[in-house]
Length: 271
Image (tube, rainbow, N blue to C red; front, top):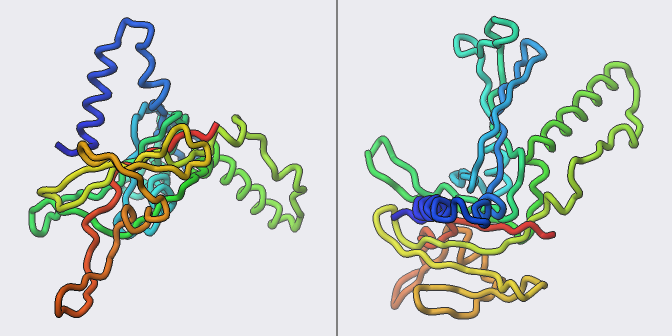
């Protein structure tokens, strides 16, 4: 089974099993976050929002060089315009509208699913995306939250208005107060689930940071029943995908796809 499907099923069954006990909110307390599904009307001043719970965030890796690029694509949204314009309930008319999803509430442990499997409709087969996509040891999630986007848009609006009036925005006015302290948005890499193989067959194994090592430098590889030390400086070669060089007896060096790459990436809030 696909490891992400297995994880979702496992967490769902675990949540069902502990229902009615003092621990029934454990899954949500550790892994649960909320998306904001937004409709932002551009032809009128109205906005609509629907919260959606999540246990993982799916991020595109195809043609994305980093996790941050994938997250930027995730929050980009789509413009509904022309015949596809949104019917604003308050105006009772169709208006151009930005439809997007962003993070409303962050979990304590953030599970990111890198979308490495897709369906090729030309060949009618499932394929694996081995594109290079790096992810950092530490990640600031503020730019991808609803709060971060609203603050960025408000600052851009103020800047545009000031430019029209040929005025400067005072620094203290430009700085906005955040809902949470900065460490609420800061995450540190906790673990990685790697897939090696193709879309039809393969193998999963994990790299996990030692919880007792506060420097975050001691990592282990968990591969079936074998547990061994992992040098975190090899993270790029073992997890980011892309290409690598191959050479053999009497053969010239050639470049080919890395068939081993990260599929699930787990971050833990630093505080």
